[in-house]
Length: 73
Image (cartoon, rainbow, N blue to C red; front, side, top):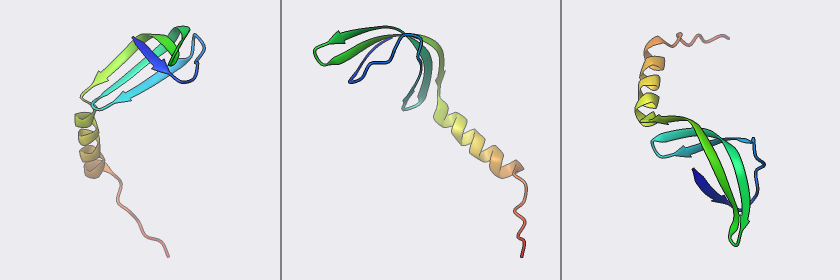
């Protein structure tokens, strides 16, 4: 994947990219200065799609199995 940033990240830097409905994990492979900033080449290692559904399921499970709230005085 190629992305453009205002600041440089050195090769080997681990990156996390959050987009609506998707989480991408990868590593910076190369960088190059361009007119608008820095161009980065990323090697994507993991992609998780449909995270809204996963979050919804997680909230439902947490509500179902969460320990009861105990008030102390």
